[in-house]
Image 1: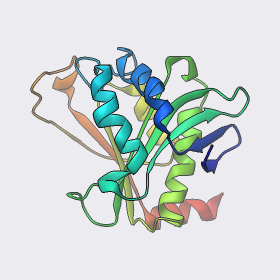
Image 2: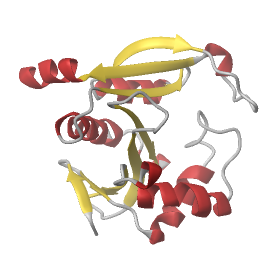
Image 3: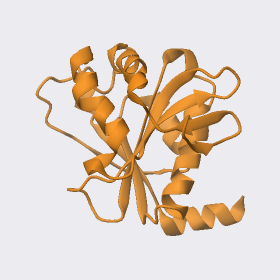
Length: 187
C-alpha cells in the first residue's frame, strides 16, 4: 500500500487496479451519486474511464486521486481528488470526494478534506482550491464549510439529463492561499 497522507483516523493511499470494485460500488450507489449523475455508471466505464484517472492522475501527471481507508478497520471507504484540469485556471485545484453510505456521518469527509486542502497549498503550491455541488446537497456543503472553504456563488448549468434539484443551481465554495495561511495561523 502506497500511502499518500494520514489523518487521525484515515489513510489516503494511491489507487491500484484492485480498486475498480470500490469505485464501481461508489459510482453505482444511487444515494452516493444522487447529486452527481442521473444514472449509475456501468462497470465498463469505471474500468475504462474512472480507474485510469485514479491510477495516472490528471493528464497522466502525478496522481491527485486517492483511496480513503479507515485506519480502525482497514476498510476502503471512499475517495478524494484534488484535480488541476489542464483547461482550468492555472494554480488552482478542484476538491472532490465520495464516500460509501456506511461512512457518512462520521466526519471523515471533513477530516480528509482539511488534510487534502493543506497539502494542496503547502506541497502542491496551489493559490486557490475550490469545490462545487448542487445547492440542494446540504451534506456536501457542510463538508466544504467544515473543511474551511467559503461560499463564493450560486450558478446554473445546462444539464442533458437533469437531476432532481437542478433548478436550485450549483454552488461554489473556495479558499485562497492567503485565507488558508490566515486560518492556519489561528489553529
